[in-house]
Length: 244
Image (cartoon, rainbow, N blue to C red; front, side, top):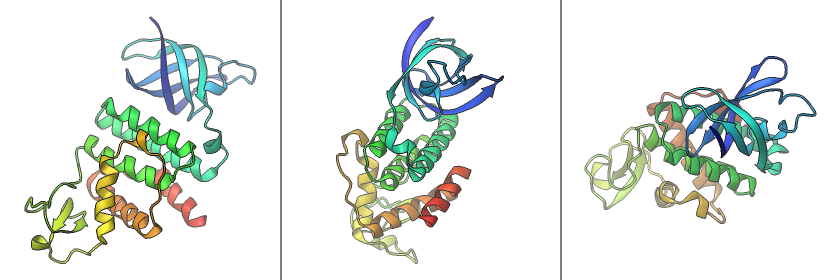
């Protein structure tokens, strides 16, 4: 069955001298494998559209639960800004690896829109750290370890929220507070905004460095504690940011 489908290439596997298998995230079919014959050749018309981290439109002979076969491909968005910036490439590498791991645990169709919109917002020049944290927070639901940002994680109270705690699993109110570090109220409110915002609707991001840093640190610790995901691409991204 020949179908036309858009998708993003999360990874690829070499196959012979000039061919490869690309692993493409699609909305309709989730993560699929596509055999691309001869595309590594310099003059192959499908070469650019089948490069790793490409957002493209694919014409394929689709086979459910098997390798599909590429007929042709065209680039939807060349992602020129991302491809010319080592830091942004590092973000996309991490987000692609993270998304692949999330899909293994929960092949939800919600993942596609959030992922693609995050990539496109980064391409448009919006803050990559904030967008990465927003996506990380949304992915916690798909991983089965959601962060409670609606009420106190201990007693369920929706009032007098004092801080956030990875140990508690989210918000902690004044009455349940023990020895948890107190974070600014702005961090508490902004973290909830991260969770509920529609990524596609974001037009600008103006968040101070202290708030960004606090949220990023919280999510790093939360992922380490609850997800069991330790990705090399995340370590590399941290190194890049430290160098920068």
